[in-house]
Image 1 (cartoon, rainbow, N blue to C red):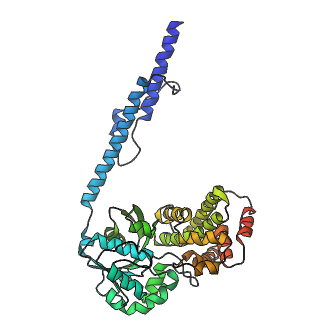
Image 2 (cartoon, rainbow, N blue to C red):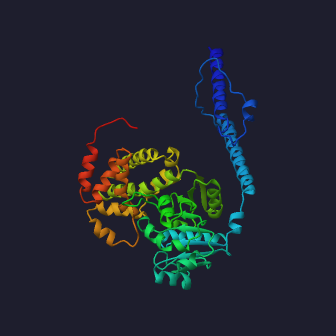
Image 3 (cartoon, rainbow, N blue to C red):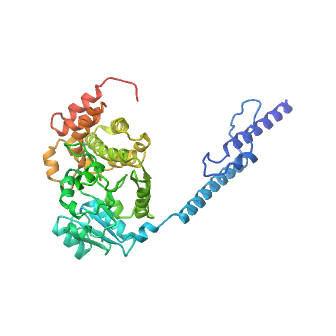
Length: 430
């Protein structure tokens, strides 16, 4: 009897070691060496093994140490790879850039102007603004009195109301004018724009009557179909950029060299910049997430709870993916920073202008009263109608975003919209 008990204990101990060894291999990642597997072959037991919990801590301490070692080695390899990559990364774009112009004096344009100016003290950053008071505030007090009165701007940020002076000799142009005003604004300054000047668009949305994206508006308004264009998007609140909090965004251009150059210009220790060639995906995701944010705000304003918020955002993400892919976007883009990343930030954080509109609509306020009390543009309000027109054009059903458009048009109350959405047919998830 004792021999059988001893034999059982030996087998149990062996099983624990065998299972522990199965848990040790490093992550299946191309960054990490695969030599581990050649020197540590996985055991092939003749019969199933089961993990037994031991009351003796000494029996589990060795596997724990081995696991920690594997994690430490994996991390060290990642850090070495990162340092090696950084040592080879080019920085010549920033070095040879002498002047950047920012069109617009809003919160995000100001934040990006401050960010770029801080990258290089010798860089001249011109902000073209309409408001003479904001212009004076930036030049005399080094702050944007309207949006960031408590934040000091770098001294190399200069404001002007003169388009020709702002654009003269610029190496890059950051376009931060709201979408609905962009076409007329650009037509007014077209004569001052160099045909080779790269435009980095910070504006998100669709033009209401034409359904155009910024990649279409900018070259058409400037009368130059070859105007270099880059879309910048991703989860990024202006206030957090001003506070230099860690942020990640994506630049998209059909010109890979231009996308890489823009990445070099903007990337810093607190701003990660990825590149993409999917301009349509980045732009359409950035436009549609504003409409979805209004829907998320309505749910919060009506106090419908966390379950409904999660369900609504998930449905909205699917609707954005359906339309974007029909328009030629990559589904991976919609799952990235400019899609899911921006959607999560805009829908779940109350700093969002569009979500604020939704919260107030859900609380029973009138749209005209809401917009009249805001000092910033909520692009989702004007984009909603354009989104539905695109959905019809591409034959895509978008119940959540359509409901938002109907509420904005005052043809449906938030309460009625929720009832209609909940009574939609129960279908297979796609």
